[in-house]
Length: 231
Ligand code: CA
Image (cartoon, rainbow, N blue to C red):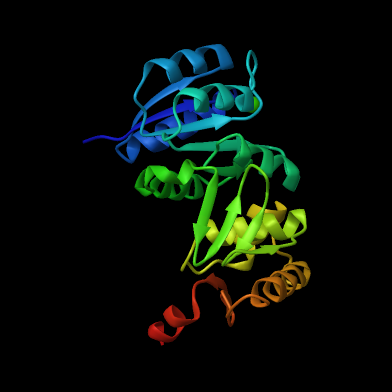
């Protein structure tokens, strides 16, 4: 059965490019070019995934998302954004987006995200995410490990949420930088290492290591047991 994707994007070239690309991959795509048309399509259809631009004429993407989530809590939504600040991303996720992608992006990256969203069970849009004994309430930003509260900065929280949304996957430095900092890794900066170190310190006050370094590759979020099994 074909997968139905709604694209709400006002930049025509980008919309055409994404629509064409997804159709070539076998998706059924409908496109709306502004917030009003977007809302019409959102209300009407049963979508397997929605790609929603944040900045739209008419009604902006975040408002649409909030309206949509009031009636549909399960359809996965990928938010497209030119906004790079972490508080904006947290706001996007708080409003019910399942993932976000910063412009400009590679089509392959978009495709990978859509595949992951369509695969993902629908409880992923819950307000709370839980992985390996760690819980984050996306509404209140309260983070806990096995019931013990974690005092995290906004960046540490964004980093932790990113790890939790991609458990057991190899996450390259570049991908983490792009998603959490919206920058390409310059190969020199140790910003990520510093944040990982702090996050580990806070997590490991309440249990074994969850963020594992893979030499020359990046990081993986998993329990110590799984780590040993993999060897
Ligand atoms: Ca736009």
